[in-house]
Length: 355
Image (cartoon, rainbow, N blue to C red; front, top):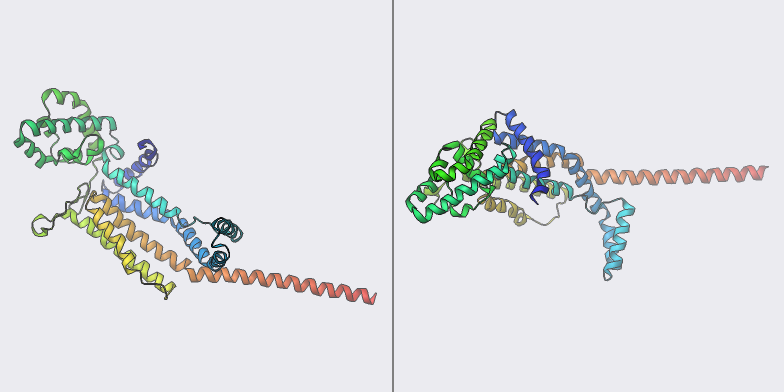
């Protein structure tokens, strides 16, 4: 499964590394520019999605008529509906593609943020896993044999039993690399360190070559927020990230609601539904690294502004008007052709009579 996702993650990692280098190693700038680039590239798909939505609105009366005629017979209704879509040239899934693309990119960004050593520093994933497993094993042994030293190292490197094993501890390895790479020698026994020394040095070298800056105005985007109701004592700077994600989602939700009201003043009030996604972003933002929440914020703001532009140029009223003009033009051309044929027929009959 991982190899399937790597088809997207590895090239995306190179793009993110390039953008990071372009902005002096700044990861936040790379995420922002990548999000801007992707949204600009997806504009044709957004336009296609908008057109599909308008076409759905246009043929809705015909769909309602089919439902009245075949509502009790699902098979006939389905066949008639597919035939109608084909005749009208409307795609049944035209509006889904942009959403699917954005979801795939979201998972890829998430993978890159969780595994920066693999996808951005280009460290060997096998070596990263080897080192991670060795530290986890040593920490487990320390917890049983020397709880004081265990607590000391947990404080320094945030490596607990829940961290588990494997390459999923890359964010913690990044913290060790940036704070004190030699602490690995203190955690492991001399014998165990000798087994991973070559791999660890290889990872250090890979990180130093890229040395990506994961901070955003002093906020470490590799950190995962830990929520506490005691906000006066336990508040963390990283909390800003899920809050920004929430506010950006609120902004785009309100913008979307305003656009819908402008299009259809009689539409029901969807304020409750509009609040759902921002709240989900806020809650999930406290369970994921800050970089993911930062990406959500960028994606919401940039995507919302792009959608506003698409609405202005390809709004339902404008597109329905264009469709209506095309239909009237076709009707006019057909009537004109029929009139010409009729006049030609009369002229032929007159010539025949005179002859």
